Length: 150
Image (cartoon, rainbow, N blue to C red; front, side):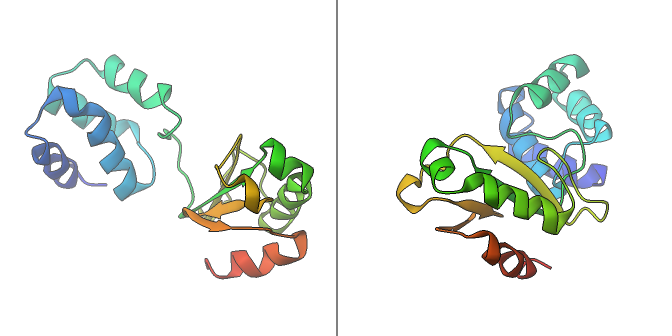
């Protein structure tokens, strides 16, 4: 991500340090992660210590300071999903993508995370891909669901 784009995002919030979280969210939305170089630009433009910007970027789960895939897969491991086969779904996602939770594939196509609940307990087991809910999934359906995100 180039510095001009980061500057445009900061300008959208009038360079207000109080908008740090929203600025980081916007940068991550555009870039899929927060590289150190982007954090350094934010630090300088908002006149904040780099340590404060880094602390914010590493504290919240919404942020990633390592590259993530173009498509984010979240497998719900909440109680309702768990009793309906979430572990089998997770294992199938791992098999199809070749990655474990917390990892990104070498092509930066997919990142995999587990979550405690997606709030769709009556539809479990559930996975989300790029925010789109896939309900009542079976392991046999995983491969076809992921093919749509190529």
